[in-house]
Length: 261
Image 1 (cartoon, rainbow, N blue to C red):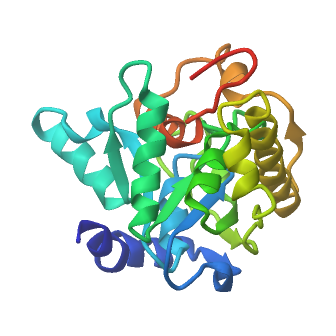
Image 2: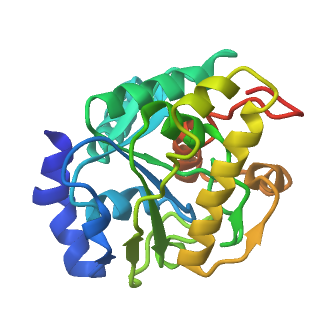
């Protein structure tokens, strides 16, 4: 209810008047049924403009703490994240990635659209970075359409380190659904929990990221953005919130040779 109120009654009309954002390729969004929406991530504003221009409601995953804070600040935080379609998950403990994946699968099983940022955090410089494999695992398990989404202009609306937005054109482009049926079914069932599982998940993730590279025209960097940002100054609170939102889903990482998240 709050999502629809903000999108159609309060925030949405104002954003359309001021920013005049453009949507392209909306015909690629199925009219019903589960959809995994995978997008590049440049700005806090991505989580506002992308669902604003998607014809159906979009659900994101966010830390449960943003929904349960005390006082007026906590109430405003909870209201905002609910309003932009976020769903709380508990990211505490070693099973945090499992919680994110299970929540995404539950939402998809309900026939909803789940929005993910495969990079797991905002790009530090506008380039596209190596994707986390959580989106691939979700796509194979849910066996749902995977629609790539290229967002441009939000890095000008709200650059890194800036709290107040600037008026700048924003375009959200939806591409044709990606077909991973060649990996699904018997092949995926056979490789799960084997040494070949990561190879399959990485192949799908790389295909998603290179599709986004083609759609955005951005340079690709074969490193995780989170590793690059470890050496950067601390983010402002609002920016940290959207990074946590991205990490809640995008970094629901499958086991990699060097780590298990």
